Image (cartoon, rainbow, N blue to C red; front, side, top):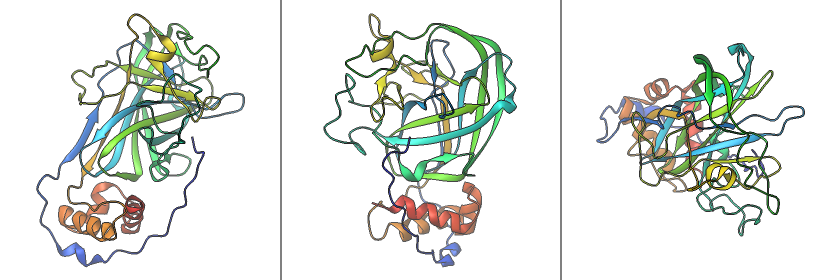
Length: 317
């Protein structure tokens, strides 16, 4: 949900002579993360805005230990029974820092807490969508007629209204998996992030399915795992905790959402904001993949120029 656009500066071209270097840095590795498989407990709305329907965003977190080029993802959700896969019109992905980064301080006070929430606004350089040509996707039916115990769709309120709406009850639908390829891969430095997908159907809604929390096999548990959050355009820029704030209980439930990410780490990348970030990062990629052209091809960039542009955005302060 874009509210505070930031300017994107032009990127200086990269010297292709780095392509002759072939040594692979120690620690370079394929990056793979997943929260596991759906647990049948929750379907949370996550949809693009459309006529008569508010934009609604559901986000869950992950951690990067090293600079990483993310070139693929998957999400699992529920659509109305009998929905043809061709009815999925759009997928958009955004990444967020953890509050208070990229956020107004102090917060509005319209929600019980912003501690450990996604930030107010997304990371500009990390938004990808089918409509912008920066991702493509395929859809697979996993389970026709899946029962989910509770849903959160419309009961997303700000204080002083009641925020504990407890969900909107069970639903049965078709479980689908959307496999995403970023045709413009995302480059992020080490850090703690939230991943937010949105899906638009020709009719009906996409309910993002929960996964066990704490994360269990085949998921990848990590220290500092946070619960899932949700907001709609009426609540923005704030977020609510789906379990603690909206559903509640004794004790309050918490949720992960079902997603996976994949790509390649770049251990010797430069540091964003530093004068040598661009050159150091391109040099590291050239060494790691045997040349800049090979790096662009292996990582899924459309050209060396596209890779250079991504590095430039990564290196911005």
